[in-house]
Amino acid sequence: MSNSNGSQLYTDEVMEHFKEPHNYGKMRDADGIGKVGNIRCGDVMWLYIKVEDNVIKDVKFEAYGCLAAIATSSVITDLIKGKSIKEAVELKKEEIIEQLGDLPQVKVHCSVLGVDALLEAIYDYLQKQGKKIPEKVKQRHQKNKKAKEKVEEQYEDWSKVEEKLHEQE
Image 1 (spheres, rainbow, N blue to C red):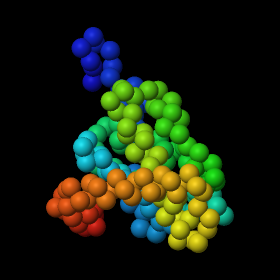
Image 2: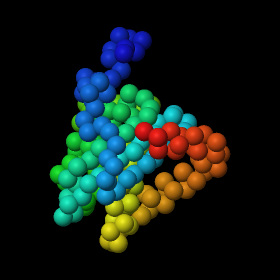
Image 3: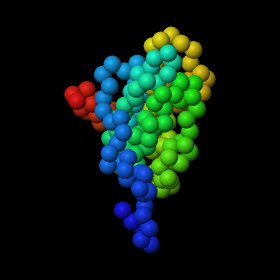
């Protein structure tokens, strides 16, 4: 893809992760699941983690959305596999963008969605295990929860269809 001056809109790294995403798929026995979405752009991400001894041993994702949403999700899985929960909590959107070699400014929100999906998966895991949830993760969860409730209220019919489609897969 090129913009009007002929330069490439997406880096080779972005295109590689889009064409052959790493760790793509549903994880049925996940220890933690994070789901986030942005109805305005149409991106929805699920991130699944398998944890042993406080280390993310396996991670998978599903993403419905644009090329950047798929590429950022793929990169996140590479960045957090083998990391401790504590290390994964510190992942920043800038690290994702750096791994991809850059993203167009209008697509940076995809990296934020990816981090949100990761933090939701960590929140889910820690809550299920009855473990202490770091304040940063709690705050992000509350923000994501409020955003989700607002979307579900505004787009109730769409939200039900989307959940039903995902369950059938």
